Length: 182
Image (tube, rainbow, N blue to C red):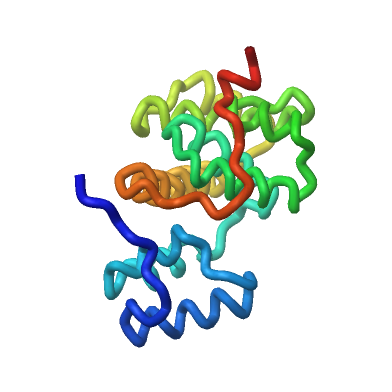
């Protein structure tokens, strides 16, 4: 299979160079995932617009979905990135491991969210009625359901890109969940 380099600022289009500059200002660096999107003239800008769009989910709730989906899709890059972001949002190491497994014994509402995200991803969008009912019983709304599905799609896009092109991980790596649970 062809290998994909992580393009530098000099190797991307002027439009993507401007995005790189904004990312560097905001984050201090350009994550390899975003740089990889820049192989396309349009994908990086389109993805960032999509990923940063308004949602009814708070940052911490988004990380619940990101971790559960990335685990199902076995995306080591996103698991590393979202473990770091999850910690910045106040999750402990043990909570992050639970979220990766699609559950949250420490919070009933987040548990329903994690289970839904995992179930949707595992079943390619065909969620269990029981899990959806549990999601609503935990206090989530129809708006939250739609926004969760959109976020599953967002994370699936980045998971697939990372898994296909084998994006080099530029966050602290995480152990496979099976090794941690063993």
